Image 1 (tube, rainbow, N blue to C red):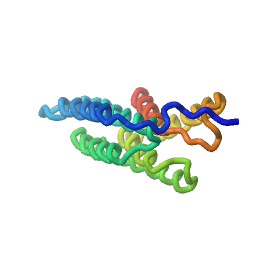
Image 2 (image 1 turned 180 degrees about the vertical axis):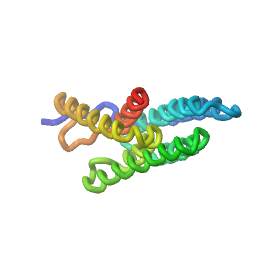
Image 3 (image 1 turned 60 degrees about the vertical axis):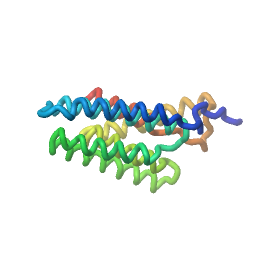
Image 4 (image 1 turned 30 degrees about the vertical axis):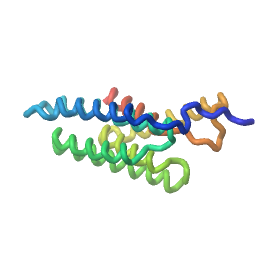
Length: 184
């Protein structure tokens, strides 16, 4: 039996939409970061909002092209790492450790099981780990893999994908990141 392909596969990406999302992320953060002596909690909220905008842009590209391009992921990683320094050293260290742990976990999975994860998923996972911090890595991983598994079951049951097909992981990572923020 042939599976009906997902409708959002391999469509061209509209860069103005992506640019708009990224501009919104930078604008929100700039409004909060630039005023002197800002409250660290407000900076954290600005980073979370900006992070969601970056993740949404990456997820849209992944849904349409099955790629998480370095041109979006690397600036997001650099941006988040830099903003964390304005929040405080302890928070930055916790976030960097979270990003490193998530990167290591995803890289190990991508290496051990070729095709299980793409390197774009690994790098986006590092961004998500950076955004949730060390304390949020395990809930992030659990929600990502449970959500991905449930989505795969639904898509297989409805014959939208076949067993050999892949599904984009970055939208699930983005939702898992948002969920971890809501509960922590």
